Length: 563
Image (cartoon, rainbow, N blue to C red):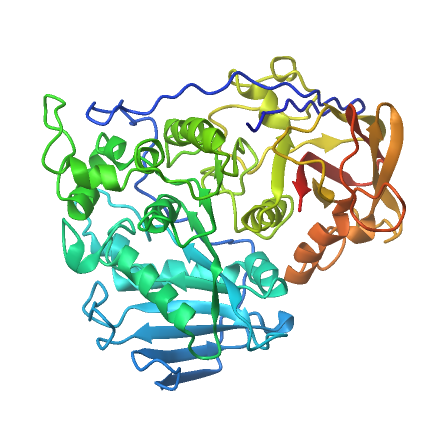
């Protein structure tokens, strides 16, 4: 199982002993019991779900083509944008699915359903089959009072949030393109939690969320418009409602056509939402009505909730798609108890069956004031999480250590309570941006212990130090900012020096600089000096950091990846 490590980071002496916390107990709601109240967090607003608002790009387009020359008669190209990501050789192509599609399904307003493909303008092997990354978005905005469902799920609202996702996720676009993946972002205008099965849907045959995704995948596997999917490398990634949706969508078939999924901050158990009055109209629309009656007994609508419940899919439905799950205990929109429940079940069932998985409570390391959604952002230190997710999807072993791991037993409000010499206090009710560590000049131990079994030693390994910097413009590009050392049984076996020029800080801080920082600071475990990554050494491991005292350098933790 993935152990949760303690990380103590301070101004001069940084200590990170490995301390595996008690395993999460299984707290899944029995199939017919009424769930506990989730009124502590309200999921009626997903406005910060898919947009990295750090950037301000112009999504100008080159042409409105509206053509049927894609190779599939019922798929039309609407737009081809070569400007947004043109500097990295990537284009955004928007397609519509006409009524001539195999089942004749329509979007939420009766028009043509749409999807977007972010792809290299020129593949190095244009005739080859390529991996597909299917990205599911969250809802547009919340329901309050008598606001109509259309404000949350209509074509206009969904188009806005999808536009943000497609045009602002520069890191995802660059990473997918470098791996020559086909990144697909479908639009869900049916307000159906991505559960809609069309003619087979038990609630409303006008719900098509799941059907839409699989129709697109069918077309990609057939091939159209120069795109050909590799059916063995279909990956899913969902944020917020898309996070719970990707589990439902990838669980439609057994075995699943998805090779692995990223589940980010998903409201994984919809029955528990019904305790939130603001969510009841939304859930009535999606799933037909209340899951329980006033006495707590299951209603006729309960089976609809069960099939949309990721925890039940894992515990009772045999769902075993390799899963990379991230969540945040301070999330103000999705109750942490839902994701804790999923994590416990994944550990139990995936662990018993030998299925790869990773889960982590990212805690304060979140880019928004709501602490909701942990992936997709391009600014360091948050961008490192994206690289780890891609590594997992491709089968890599993943582990993560961060400062807030020491706070799992309770709320950290002082240096003493956290056990770390941090330069800011932490609170469960903090609404600030990410709480990350700032270290002054000095040396200290970042980590002591062994690497968990989830990171195999027999494969090449890398370390991603989660770094951000400020006030470094006066430093020369070659100036060392922090030096990292890996020790095995007390002997230094690998050293990594991060220079000011490796960081986006002190530069123009462009999209390219943010992306380059992750690569520049990636630490290959080079034990033989040949410049290639080596397997982690045997024995007790120590990671030590020495800071030069230049500007402000924040070190929030580190990822260990075994490719």
